[in-house]
Structures are given as C-alpha cells and as structure tokens.
Image 1 (cartoon, one colour):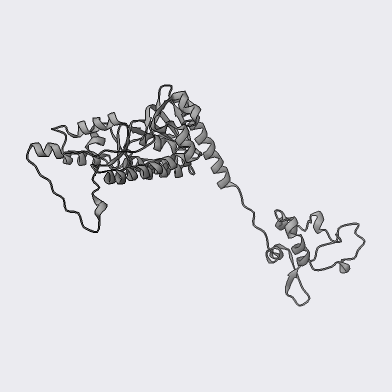
Image 2: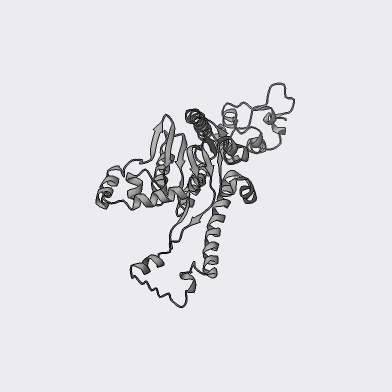
Length: 357
C-alpha cells in the first residue's frame, strides 16, 4: 500500500515527477553531501538571538535525494536542528519559517510533539509565507504563535492515501502478479476494488485524520469539533480569514514577527536568569541558632550559651526570665529568620525576642 500523505494533490504529482527523473545524483554523492554537513544545522540559521528553522517544500521523514537536491525538507533534519537551537544558550527564541504544501504523515506527529514541548523551554513561533498546508500546518500549529502573510494559504487539514491499480496495464503487457497472504491475516491486503476492501482502507485514513485533527485542537487550545467546523474542513483559508477563524494569530511581515519574537525571547531569558540567581533562605533550627549564639565559660569550665543581657529600663530581673536563651531563640526563629545569626552574634534582639517580651 502506498504511503499516507498530508499534502496538496498537485504537490504529490510534482514529487512523483521528480522521483521519476533519470540521471539524478547517486546515493553515494548524497551521503558525501550529508556527511560534510552533519556537524552543523542543515535547516537552522541564527539571526541575533533567534534561531530560524526553514520548513520548505515537500516534507519527508528522512533525508534523501529529494531533500538534498530538490528543495524538500526532512522531519529528522528539522528535529535535529530544533535540538541544536534549544541547546544553544545564545538562542533565546525559535522561529519556524514555513512555505510548504505538506508532506508525509509518518514522523510529522513526532516533530510536532517536539515543537509543542519546546514551548516550555523557549518561545517558539511560526511564520507562514506562501503555503502552510496539511503537514506543514500540523507543525506550525504546534508553535505558541502563528503569523501569516496577507496571501498565505493555510489549512488543508486531513490525510490522503493513494492506491495505484496497475492490473490493466500489466494485462496489456502480459504481466500477471499473484500474492499469497497468510491465512491468519486476511486484512493484510485489502482489495480496494471491493466494498469491504474500500471500507477498511477508508477507516485507516479516517483514523490518521483523527490524529491530525486532535493534534491541531490541542496545539491551538480548541476542541476537535471546533477544528472540524471552523478550520476549513480540509480546505484552505487565506491570510486574514485564517486569523479570523483562529487558525493563526495575526497577519504580518516576517521581519516584524522576528523582532517581536526576539524581544519575547530576551524577556524570557532575563526572567529565567533572575529566578535562577535569586538567593534562597533556609529555616534555621534551634540547634543551628544556638550554635551561632556567643558562648561563655560555665562554672565547671565548660562552654555554654550566653544568656541575653536585659535591655535598659527592664524592671524584671535576669533570673526571673522564663526559659533559656536557646528556648527563646527557638520560639522566635520563625519571626526573625533572615537576621537571626547577626542578631544573636551581636547580642542585639528583634522586638519579639527582647528579654521580658
């Protein structure tokens, strides 16, 4: 059975046409090309404090001749470059720049999930120029903000599975094909020429489509029912219409969107730095407080905790004070934790701890 696509039909035809070309580069040439770039981001560029990931052209799970020489995109390459951007301390935000008719369903969900989870670490937005269709919109929806150009085509939410029937063509050239399927697996090769076979294939496509719809609903913070009713029903919406329906957040230009994202990234980085550098205060136990108190020799020559000196004007005698210095420190620990060690060491007491209080 053919691969499932979340892609515009005319783009699928272009992909098949390119795949059928002769005299394309050899696999050996492709591997040499990839090896030379394996140590750096293939789809990642950096401007200021923003990492830009380009999702352009038809999209496939793995890098191949199409992605290397025909302007297509690999999900695996994008995932690797996304991680590079997340790990780079100088990159404070990430922009997914989209211009794609869609692509293969396989692995699109995994990349979309990675983008969605990346929102917890850094601001990540999408800018759609030209096309943000099907699988490309799936990825864009996973970001925390979508900006579209005035004429951007957005949507095409759904899955297509094509089945090619070559039986008549084979008959004309005298080719007969026979398949034997294990008795335990009668549905392994559903026959699309029969109603039962069509129903099984249709269920498969519907299940994949449901995954797509539910993912978009989660990413955009709406229900699956709303996506089905408002997000084009598999069709496309242009620019401002897509924003009005909730498929995108605003209409704008790339440079302006990039500047806003840069500012968001800088603010989030500053906020994180402030939180990480803020001093933490730990509660002092009575034992620890007593350890900070000045010590005086006892009658037996041992060291004990010095009793606080009564404040001037206090009519109570020192002998009538209740409890020891350690007990008073313990009772007042929660009321004067930040300066306790200083107060005790310098024999100065906060109001709550003064003798006679």
